[in-house]
Image 1 (cartoon, rainbow, N blue to C red):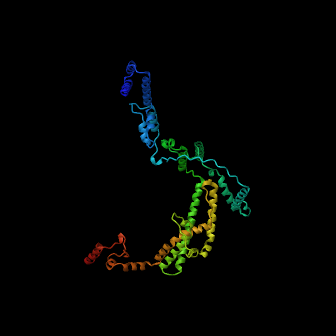
Image 2: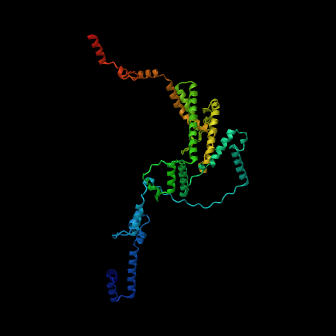
Image 3: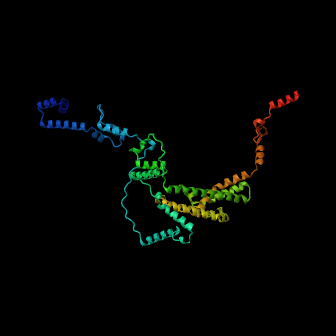
Length: 435
């Protein structure tokens, strides 16, 4: 009965307002009961004011972000809140990026604890100084006394490229880009490129130039590079180096493949024996190539009586290497010169190692060995005469197919003015018969 009276009193206070409170006071409740009822009223008002916070606190931890937003959203009252209006206006002011142009979220890097800087010993400093001195001597600076005037001028030109204005790093700020653009505009005005410009055309508006979703400095830099062809010199030198390396490697592999196929074929035997010999060389080359043996599978150690001396089966030709050594050494020197010039311009993270002849030769042997069998097969097929191949093909076909569908039939088509058909023949016969 006390619980029911308490619930009735709570309902009268919550729904009755002032009249309900007056009725409770006139009913003669105790002060303790009145205090409890008033605390419940205050708690109900507090929960109503902070409804979203209580709902979010009551949700389980596994609830998704979308469910949390829907549960804690403010109920629609018929009018749009000011903060929602401002957010919608900001979103509509700029065109959003396409899904493929949006970047992926990158988590912030974890700050590592500071490490103690290693102090170089005296021996380490001496070794580093010795290496730098050796590099200095390899560049040819210290031994330039015996060079000719043309070689000395070429060396000066090579080292001068690093200190040219074009070899400096590109600006990475808006002010630096503006200064670079103004400099190019002034140079173009001085050359007279703005005299005959078409007038009256509207400027092309680029909505992405002022987009808040991307880095405008990087975007402007990329656009200048594309339109004005402003490419750092080390990029051009990198393309030149890659082209020279591709030509050298392609020629080296073609020459060695042709020579190896001829040498294997000249040792005699049938075509199958030559192909089997080439496959044995390829298998031996694969066993001696460390890069081809790297795999995730479990490796086994060969037995002591197993033949592991594959070095005797590797196909090499000292005479060919001796004959081609002059060309290969000169090519390696040219590639190293291009690499040295590129390293002088490129940043430290983009520099490339120098070339060595032994490494390139081993790579060539490893790449060409699997192709020798196919090369021998193609060369053997090319040596077969055309008439002999046609006879073998006709022998393998049936009698009806030989006479009904022959591919080696020669058809001569005359010109239109020289054509002699049934009409021309009938005309000549009629003329002879008449007269």
